[in-house]
Amino acid sequence: MMNKIKTMDSLTIGFALFAMFFGAGNLIFPPFLGRESGGSWLIGFICFIFIDIGMSLFAMIAVSRQEKGAEGLTGRLGTKLSTLLLSLNCLCIGPFVAIPRTASITYEIGILPNFGEINSWMCTAGFFFIAFLLSVRQSKVVDLVGKFMAPVMFFALLALIGKGIASPIGEIGPAAETGSVVRSGLLSGYQTMDMMAAYIFSVAILLTIRQKGYNDQKSQSALILRGGLVATVLLVVVYGGLAYIGATMSVTVKETLSQPQLLILLTEQLLGKPGMALLGVIVAFACLTTAVGLLTSIASFFAEKTGVKYEALVAGFTLISWVISNFGTATIISMAAPVLDLIYPVLIVLVVFGLAGRFIQSDTTYRFAAFGAFAASALLQIGNIFKVDIFASLLPLSDLGFGWLIPAGVFAVAGFMKAGSIHR
Image (cartoon, rainbow, N blue to C red; front, side, top):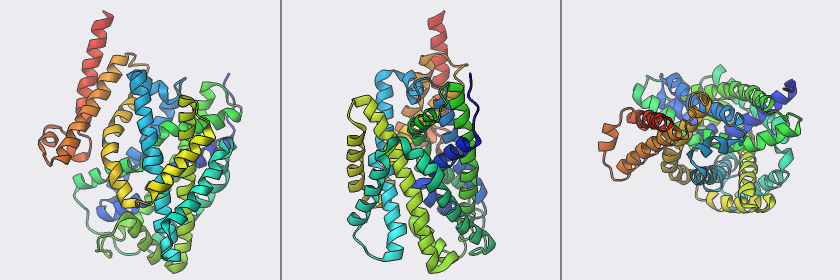
């Protein structure tokens, strides 16, 4: 029997998902995308939220429908490949890329503009000490984030966005070339790594949901869907506002700036020096909530797989993240791009097939489609590394970042036909 869903539980889960998904990447990419897109900012924004919010929500729903969680999806590839894929996913969104980026963003945007040159190792050490303390109390994380940290962050963001809409920095510039805008929007969505995180965040979210008394799968799926819709609304408001403000800078700001530098300039022009303190609060909450959510979920995953104590894993991942965070945001983002381009397509295929699970029963179809997506992505990466564009020219939609899509579809059909011949 399905439990009755409480409104407060939906809001708590929704705000927690908003905070976990918003994080460092989502904070710096929309304004940059808006400025680069100019009059086409809405197109870039739609592409961004499709890959980021849309696919993340689909992933959460697909995972919640599986009795084994994320492994219910990746398990269709086989036990060894499933473990390898989830482990690589966890390490990428965990101590090697996403978690270090939360601290480096906090330092570059929240600390340097307000306090000047301060040793980054000391600042990031303080950041990760707090993240560690919050993550160790595993069962309290989602409630803490959803009831307290996320609302503070959301209303601080609304203050910044409201000022940007009421007093635009400048006029929105001419529209950029559509193909370039679409690609930028999709790649920015990739860089947030939210859909990858959705596979793992489900561990922490489902733990909290069960502790609230929702023990049957239908109730859990329904609560995740409602919470996901709440998070989607909040994220669309924030993303849209930040992208629009970025577009109003497309004429007035001509110099080349990184994503963090643009966000700092945006805030300073809208709110002056006092606004930098507000930005520091926003960044601290955004990055800390994401770091806590990732540490909790990834440590839970590896604790179950390896038998190592949860607390020890949190400590180990925190230490690794601290060291890498001092490489700097630009370096971390550049390190992430090739890995994302290889893993993301496979995860997208599994989510889409997972949502259509009743129509796709054969594991062979899953494996063929995933292989097609991975092989095409690998060819494109080889072309990028060796500066050879033959692979891109042979793969339709590669200029939009979807060169893997048609190969995945072709291999899926081949897998479906092979599975049919086996059953006959």
